[in-house]
Length: 378
Image (cartoon, rainbow, N blue to C red; front, side, top):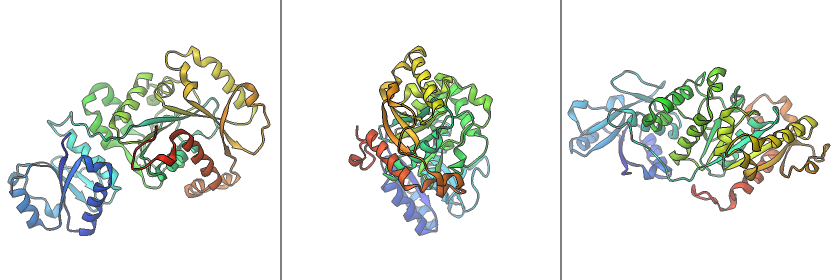
């Protein structure tokens, strides 16, 4: 795909340097050709020269009369405060949001305009799907999934965190923008009714968490909507994220159930971290589920071939005969007693021993020593 010509205009030269510098060093370098202007007269001369410009991103005082420059296809206003759309005629975006989120929204607005509904903004990354699962509840799946997403992002992987729980606990870890997961619900709607708009809608709906450095969708909060997701819905959603090719790893946070949406993600997973605890209930449920997997349909019986069993909250010695039961353990994550009294997410992310073991597990999956520049090691 030819690069999109984007012009950004703002009186703040520092902001312009930050914006253009980010584009040059990110995946967007292959998708965008950017010119910046800090003076309106210079912008007017450039646009008056007749150069075709797909996107003009500008502060209010620098936006020209659209009728004067018909060669500009899409005009978006940069707002100093607030976010969203100010009026129907001209979309507006909050200037100071994370640049990855800003550019995603810019692409989404551009692609959704009349005549551009089939535009897809894809990267060049080979996305892999990593699911965190368990047979019993309370094993720490979200704790592991969110921390794993963060550790991978800190190692320069581009990460998307996807929460697929019936009742999500992700907001304990990520102060998610928005309430109710309405955008997630709308994305599912477009998947079924207007597939051509999926690429642009995903760009508009996904968020970015600065602390974990991962993108995400706000999870659905209505139980009925999550329960209504079919296996095909889940598989289609994973396919959309993979086809976007903007991420090295998509971390899927699953619940301890055999719901269709869970089975769909497991089928699409390249790797599965299956958590268990060193207690009788967790071990019993794991054994029972392993016995049932081959009976759950095509693609489910092969789950074990891509699974690593990890004992969470490990205290240093087994109390139950886990490995004698035929479960081959690939790693251990230590019990962190300080988390019982934690009152901030910074405390929850700062357990060095936990993060070290988690990084080792990530290394066994992705060969971290060989990862550089967004290229995933096979």
